[in-house]
Length: 357
Image (cartoon, rainbow, N blue to C red; front, side):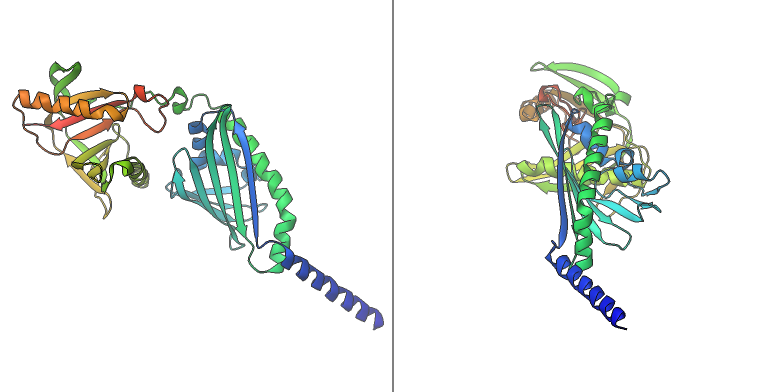
């Protein structure tokens, strides 16, 4: 009996020590690891933002080759998610809660009812390539045993995160065929590709063509902002439109567009972010959808930075006045090159269309 009493006292003492030590540990596990990868920002971002590409370098997926991954309809950008089932790693899911293209990717993780976490990837262009920083936080709550377990696991997690960045570097630096490697100057298809050219003229050194546009289907989001907020707003809207397309199995037909209804800078601009799509579809409360009928329009091409767009617009309206055309609907711009991946603004190509009668 005396021996049992001693053992009991020892066990209680050990338990008290564990509780006390546990309470002394931080209430959350926080880690931050960085690495410079010899690849452009857009390539490194792509291998994180695309969950299927992320699975290739994920240290946890590589630890268990039998892991079952279940993809959602959206696998890229904000709202993308997947879940996993693993006898080695346990079960869980990850969702991208916020994505800023070429800057940050934030993810919420659920470890199958065993807690959660929040991860953030940040991307920065540096002299030798891209500095990527992987931050992770997991709330261990007030449970002393969970806190102690977090403290015990942290060194191993640090090693795993570093291995993940090494694998990301290996994968991204080898991706020389990624479209953005060329600097983003490759051209997207245009509405003009299937249009009938009626007449071509020169105004102030700029080519203006009269064209007959075919019918085309579209989805779009109408919005408003001041001039300084247009870029961020459109970026967010195009992201939502892309998610809608993936969810509804729509395909891009041409480069993205923007239609302008009110232009009263610097404080009031009303516009729609638009993507021509492969078929007609019903919209939602947020996303407009429809079909543009075939129409006659004038098209003028702007080369270079958006800062000089006013002169190009003025040339278009000058041509309309000289030829007796009247505007027939809201004009729009077509972004043939992607400004988010184009390194040299002088290579940007933008078509301006004004429907006329």
